Image (cartoon, rainbow, N blue to C red; front, side, top):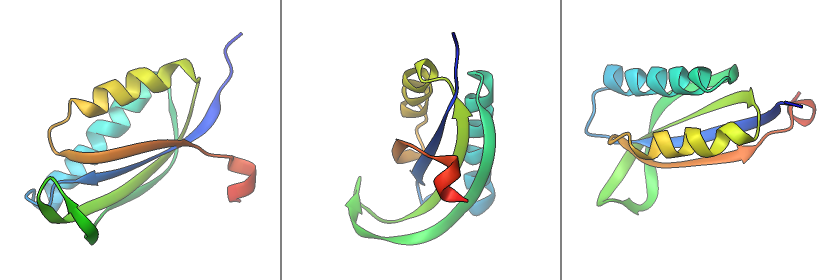
Amino acid sequence: MTYQRGYELGYLISPLLPEDAALKVLESMRSLIESKGGLIENTQSPKAIRLAYPIKKMGNAYFGAIQFMTNPQAIAEIEKDIKTQEHVLRHLVTEWNKQLAT
């Protein structure tokens, strides 16, 4: 039996990219999630932020988030593929309860 849960992917993108390229990274992550059977619920476009501490010697980054539904088995594959994207500095996938968020 396949069931879906809600997840949120928070990510930091390298500040060395121009803003339009950061949006392309977002689109590639959305496509990745959808290719693994995920359904996008909400997207927060990447915004430039100052980091509390340097990550990979960078003090700034683009921060964004994607809320989506997928089956739990797909999460490991999604995270593995995100790790291969060179412009993603950090990411975190957490479980997201859609009922509590509304």
